[in-house]
Length: 354
Image (cartoon, rainbow, N blue to C red; front, side, top):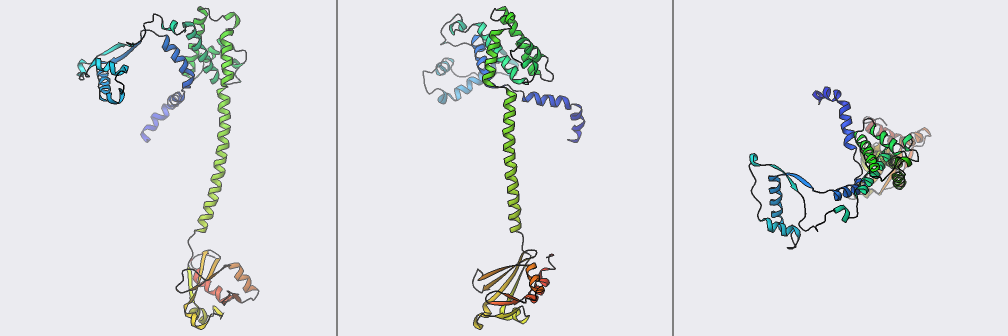
């Protein structure tokens, strides 16, 4: 990529313009009806194609004839039966491009297709002009001078034809000017009344469709609201994640002391109500899940769960020591607060500050 940087920087404007032009795709449904009118009005349709492309298409139709021609009397089935097997591919030197006339053998002989469909050439031009002006107006900012009502179609077409950095808009403007001239020559519209017939149609269509810019602004506002909601939800999830992470933070360690052993000999346990015959099976766990936080749990050998638990804060123990309160009651036993602090200091202080 580093070697391409000089080329990219030198052609930055061209590349940006190319990328922007790729995005300039007009609404398919806006031009579909117009394209259909134009296609129906054309005569002598031809297709430029090579011989090998014709043969390859024929071979594909033959290969999948079972799926395509479930009805033996369908038009495609009749044509394939008439053609027979597909010819073999020609060598490259013998392959030629031909202009293949398009027609239907089942088509009713009509001298004038547009007349049969009740569509005149004037109507085709009028529909194309209306579609072109609507597309131009929906792309022009609503506060532009040419967007004021009533519309001046010549000014609209001229403004589109002089649009900067937008080849698509320029082509539409030029085509709009051509259509205005053709419709005037055919007597469909008149410049003296500001092309009122076409102008009224365009304005009604714009009122129905709405402004493209206004629609984009409204959609942008909705997307901003969605983005804000997603951002707020992400913030909430982040906080929950931090809380969960804190809850699952690795423990600083566990101290296990046995009642008749370490606990009583070191004076950590100063009084016990546990019967003598059960003291050997009793032990205590001192766990520090977080710095400054401790959990004292009483366990009986052979049982997975503790009999009871007591949550303590270091500040609570220090406060008890300050008040000369030496007893920490855990129902079955009483701990000596200074000895407990000393034990915790020895085991946990060297692992992490608490």
